[in-house]
Length: 86
Figure 1: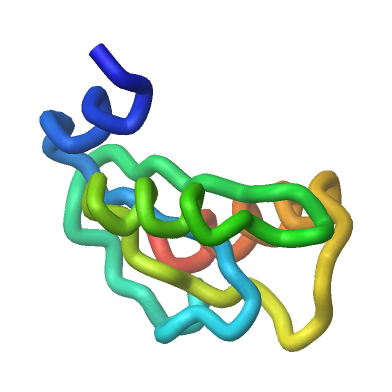
Figure 2: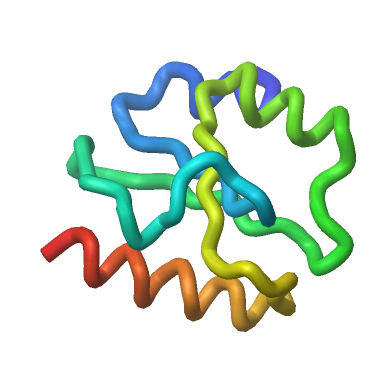
């Protein structure tokens, strides 16, 4: 089974951390009991990766106006998700 096909079958929220995403992570309301957050490299996702994630049902979210290093993006995503999940 292709990697992203696995996510299509999950009953989870799937978020794609992407600069310029449609919604801010901090504005989300958790809808599922489990959430998958895809965080890419500093240089961003390539077009084919973005298309694959979107076809698998991932929604774009923005973590910051700034381009974050991957390790900072991870900490930021986890902190923001903890806040919105309360």
